[in-house]
Amino acid sequence: MLIACAATQQATTRLFNPFVSSRRAERKLPMPCTSLIFFRLVQGRKISWDAFTLQGEAQVYAVRFPSSPSLLCREMAGLINFEDEEEVKEYLDNLGVEFSFQCYKEKDPDGCHRLAEYLEGVKKNFEGAAKVLKDNCEKNLHSESCYKLGAYYVTGKGGLPADLKTAYNCFLKSCEKGGKKSIDACHNTGLLAHDGRGNDDEKPNALLARDYYSKACDGGFAPSCFNLSAIYLQGAPGIPKDMNQALEYSLKACDLGHIWACANASRMYKLGDGVEKDDAKAETLKNRAKDLHKEQQAATRSLTFGE
Image (cartoon, rainbow, N blue to C red; front, side, top):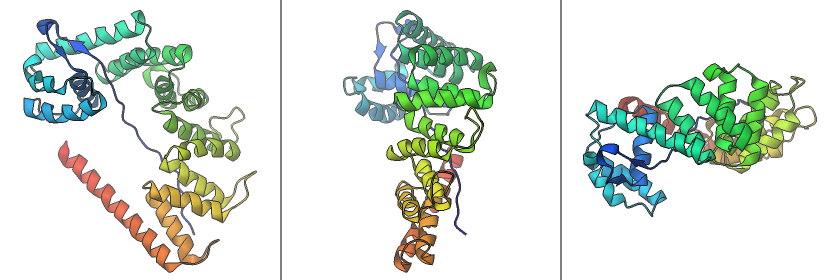
């Protein structure tokens, strides 16, 4: 019996903004520094705010923003004292002012999304975040805002009703618009079409799901590749069983790091189920699945002890 499971994947959010402290208005933090600070604050992660740590981590952001002088990050600990509760509060308040200005005065859709992230991650004002996301998605068709709005509708977050059909439409907009979260959005669109919860008639639509899984799989999203392999492995209304396609997508998902895809492909080769039997390939894929499992366990332990 071959394994066929659906998988989901969480995503991280990248947030950027410039910031000038009113206490030190003559000194402006370079973009890599403010990006790093806000990202850490939104994550709620504990971090040592000493100059050495900030120097090292800011270098990563400097690669993304070569025009920003990362050397200035060495002075960050002197610009913002994170042991001073009042100064941290001022910093956070100024972030809100900056993002509000970008959104409402400059009419910048990216600024509106930053504001929503700020309201959610820093202020824990989920209703406020939901309003900004809804406006930014409906008026500006901002892909990342539509994606996050869809997630809000899935769980009924921020005072919004739990509504999977509306969530489906939000994910669909994000998927079709393209952007940082479009691949995830295409996968979610496929999931809701696949089990029918996002469809008007509430009936499963494997054909439609296949289209959106294909978009996400083409973008390198392993769970979508795996779901495609499961569709072809079992067959579905309008989609005949196709072991060659099932193997092809299992191998692609395996290459992208999906454990169960490696296990399925290994078993297909081991049993000769729809493909020519090949014990060597079966063993290689089984070992790949084992290695991925070990990597996942190591990553989990690292996250646990790193908190």
